[in-house]
Length: 133
Length: 372
Image 1: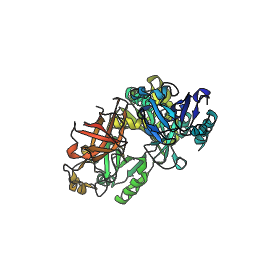
Image 2: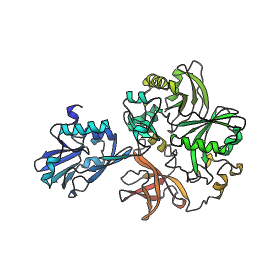
Image 3: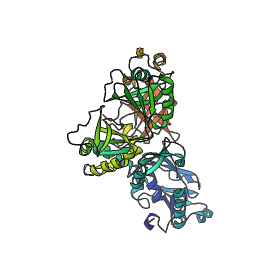
Image 4: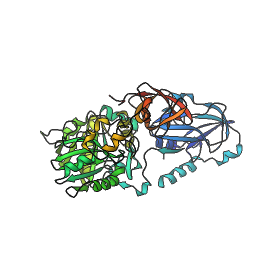
């Protein structure tokens, strides 16, 4: 897998979310592998700004032509912003999953959760394990 | 993420392979289990494959479908009794859609009946129903009919889209004539004897090609190769599903099952006179058809959301029915669906809602098929 498909500077979850730290805040999206598996993304449902997320529980929904998938929060926190472009352009998640296709901006409220996230190598390993099942 | 895909069929490891399994892997298809077979969902993108069929051509492997052959002196009488469509008037080299009903007028399966000779017919049946159909048929025909299940050795390719005739013409021998809609012809394609049926499941013009599984990969590759200049794409079950939905073609297990009647499913035009006494006719005559009877409708979402199979259909806060199929339509750029509601709520223009993750989203009944 090429490096640009799993950027080194991000953290990941086994549920295919990526997390980018920006000071006290984090930006969350889905990985290249996830958007590729889903295929053409046609609908993204995100929480309201001000809502809270709980690590490991769904915070939204993403739909491809064929499938409906839950989006699982990587961290507990408060939603500071959502990517409003996705309402009309859900395909941005396919086109630029680490850029314009980001999902939510969060203020994490439980710092203990951060060390539990995967690094790029760890995430690549979970994908490889799934593929070999 | 954790996803659920529509379509099911047990664990991948237990699934059967079609003769084109190696070709799908070679083309990089995403595979999933469907009705007990490893089938390609998509090769490139469902939308691209869908668009190829609407504008140019797509090639599908549908070898998972079953073929059940009937021969012998009692064929016509026996098959006339098995299906809702007329067999008496079905001439040699013609195909016709019909339903096999059970004694309660529910659907055992929906089938394409093709007549190959005065005393030889075959059904093309749904993959998920092959065993059930074969048992049902054996239990309902007499000793003067020979019934053979040739599903395993028969491959089926579907070449669909406006460029289909051009592409197929290039592989047929000089002077060969392609059949017209709902007719079949035996043609030599790339040196292989193929039964070409001008039919399909996409709402587009096209052909279904029945041939021995041993030659399927060769023909599949030749069609993709020779159709390249016409913009052909290999297409998977994902596109097949959105295409058939736009054409409002029923899918067994969704719009049809052992309890739904063909009238409820809006398939009246495929049902001959009930007085002919086919299996299920008596029960069909007795089924109530009133304002509360279930009726299949087509709808489009007027609010923001995608209806999916098994979501509830709501009217004035009450659950009145359920969605049987739904997807974002690549052709229309909006979300469409099929579902059952009481007949009184089935008029075109009727406002309804679909309950999507506990939220009622606006929808409206529209005329079928979506694609005209």
